[in-house]
Structure formats: structure tokens, C-alpha cells
Image (cartoon, rainbow, N blue to C red; front, side):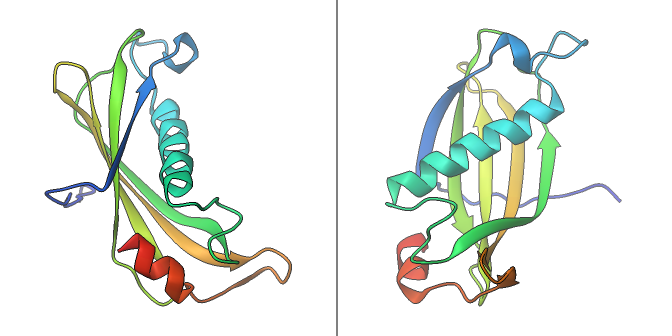
Length: 138
């Protein structure tokens, strides 16, 4: 069975990320590993827009529990991709981030998701999603 993602109708954040020459693979298009790196960049920018970082979400750190990427089209060197991000499935210990990658012509390049968990890096254990952070992430 193939991976499936249901993207929301609206996204709460967007950024633009250029496709660098180092993002291109031997097929002369955007490599799958580069999409994951771009998701990381978009996630950091999204969190910064809310006043957070991956190491400080109201006192909680974040750790990725899973990821899924569905490729919809090719990206090429020189493209500037719009990456839209929003939260989904907030729960006791974390949330999902949903991503939509679109090129300048409006063609979808990828749909993606990361599962994020709140983590205490000092004790190396999961922790509850802080209420104040949950309110901002909704």
C-alpha cells in the first residue's frame, strides 16, 4: 500500500526556499534527501514565526518521530519553492506538521508530514506538549 496524506485546505505559514545546485541528484532534478532538508528549514522558520525553536517550545524540546513524503512533480536547479506549513493532530505529547511544496508555476512538487514529539533532552524522555504552546500551534 502506498503512503497517503490528507493535506488541509489552508496553511498557517509559508516560506520560499530556493533549489540549490547541491539539492540536485544524478537525475538532474531535486533529490529526495533535499526535500527532507527543506522540510527542516521550513519547520525552523515556522517555529521562529511563533517565537519558538526546536530546543525551546515553552520549555520542551522537539524530536521527530516520523516523516512521510509524497512526490508530486520534479524540482529543478533555480526553482524557488513555496513551502506551506501548518499543524495537525495535536495530542498529549506533540503534533504533526503538514507541508505543501509548490514551484513558481503553481505545480505541486511534494506533500509531506513530520510527527513531532516534545522531548526533554536532559532526561532523554518524552514530555507533555505545554498548554501555552498548544494554544499557539492550533
